[in-house]
Amino acid sequence: MSRTVISTPHAPAAIGPYSQAIAYGNLVFTSGQIPLDPATQQMITGDIRAQTERVMQNLEAVLTAAGCDFSHVLKASIFVADLADFAAVNEVYGKRFPQAPPTRSTVQVAALPRGARVEIDLVAAKP
Image 1: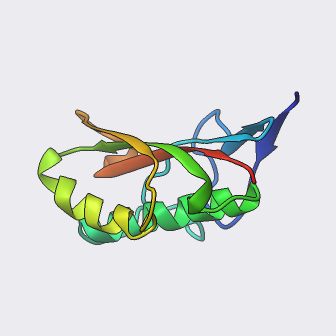
Image 2: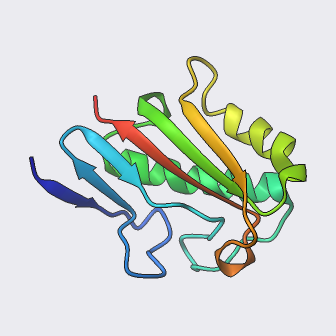
């Protein structure tokens, strides 16, 4: 099997030495997405719901570039700066997985890049 870099201009460019996603066989591993606007590479303004929505839009763009969508996601990892935001993040995140949601971990972290309040990465299987 070969390792393939996935890249799209519809999600933020990497802000470090990493790829937006890597496909290996039929698996797709996304890098963590924070609420950056892909057009400006700047953090969006808004509350945790707005930040989570931007993160999910960024992930959707990366999945699309890999030939997947949210129905192909097997595992999600969610990192929040404050677990008090859990319910709001869950509300926005859950809209993308109305049936048979993937496995998931959610952890509170001390800080996230650029002061983000949420970061999410995914593992998906190409159809």
